[in-house]
Amino acid sequence: KNEVEQSPQNLTAQEGEFITINCSYSVGISALHWLQQHPGGGIVSLFMLSSGKKKHGRLIATINIQEKHSSLHITASHPRDSAVYICAGPLYGGSQGNLIFGKGTKLSVKP
Amino acid sequence: DGGITQSPKYLFRKEGQNVTLSCEQNLNHDAMYWYRQDPGQGLRLIYYSQIVNDFQKGDIAEGYSVSREKKESFPLTVTSAQKNPTAFYLCATHARTAPYEQYFGPGTRLTVT
Image 1 (tube, rainbow over the protein chains, first blue to last red):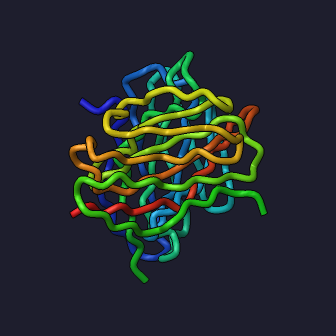
Image 2 (cartoon, chains in turn cyan, purple):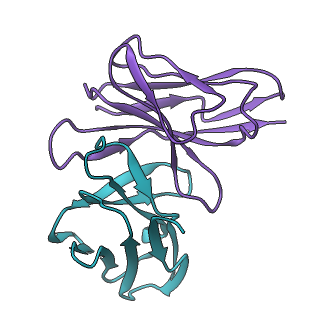
């Protein structure tokens, strides 16, 4: 069983829809990163959370440490949001860059 | 602008040949990491280095080697001992202080035939 599980694996939405991607983890992660991978392969960091909620533009990330669960929400989705979204986290006591990754959620937003 | 560069973007090699992937950063970050990405799988850690002249094996280090002679550079050699080298390789660093923002290079797609 993967230590970091994402759902759904694939998601197709119409432009303007509200989108939720979920991430559950079974290991002790000290913080959770949400990453975005574009079709060309490049990855950018969206959020790092250790508690609560963060918002950046149309993106909102939440985390519940007790339940070991995080969600990424996209409001008013747009075709340019089409990408693979990955959650990842470093184990407690480990290096901050030694991350355990989910397999990613592939999002496609249709105009 | 600061960032991570990886070259080349696409690399083709014949089976049995060693190949070295380049990773350079001008972010002044101490730690550097190499990940491998295969279709349908999460990224997996190959090697990492937290300081010049020191590096540690990650989860899938067999068949790979690295060096860290300069802070800015962390090249990865895929040796002929790597059983399944065809993959997408990503180099990464992270900020020194919280929230330890992650930075990734554009990646190198290696195809071995």
